[in-house]
Image (cartoon, rainbow, N blue to C red; front, top):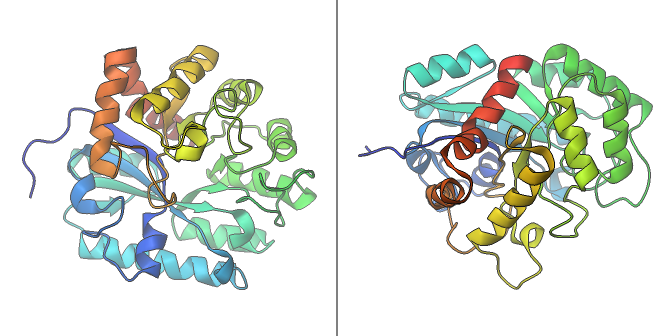
Length: 314
């Protein structure tokens, strides 16, 4: 199906492709979205987090709607079991890589999916979910998102963080407001991540992270995944690859090269930077990062840092 695979391994901590494919009645193997398996397989045994996010239209029954998307995910993986397999553990990832397959991982984007129930969190874990952003942009039973001016993590949210850590689910702080973020720092006992967030110092939007927040994630042992959303990258009318490198450069200066990764947000963003129209174009970014920061830093960013994290947590 493919010729030469790309040089670098890819570990992408966030895409919304499963949900978009489900809602638009498209196949995961080949489609006209930002990402599909046919293109993803060009990378060397990639690890791809498939996030489950719900539009407001589906929030009356978020648990049920999320389960529908999980069922779709497994149906699609079954159709393509020769090239992709679900991973619930670090050992699963190593096994898939040995077999030359895409490593698919389930995450949830927005803790409203658990409907205020630890039991439903357990059900998602049993279905293979291994990471969760505690909120999307708004308030839910766990805490307050980036669209809320005030309010942090709730008492229930503290219990969720504790139980996620006990189970081995990764706590994801992308989309939290600042008060909730610092509550996670206070209550988390294990490394946590921002799967798809950039530098607020470089682009001043609430969804990006301050230098202090970047340091807090690094101090926890966590990783920050760089997001491709143009409005998080620049105030200019259009973003380009160089804008991504500006954020990478700043974040590396703040927390070093051991705590930065990629969370492209493909199919969760309306547009992409010029030159990064789909997942195949990530190779251009890989080459840019290697040229600017060196091969070792590029390998850490595109694979090794997130791999090291999951090896500790799963």
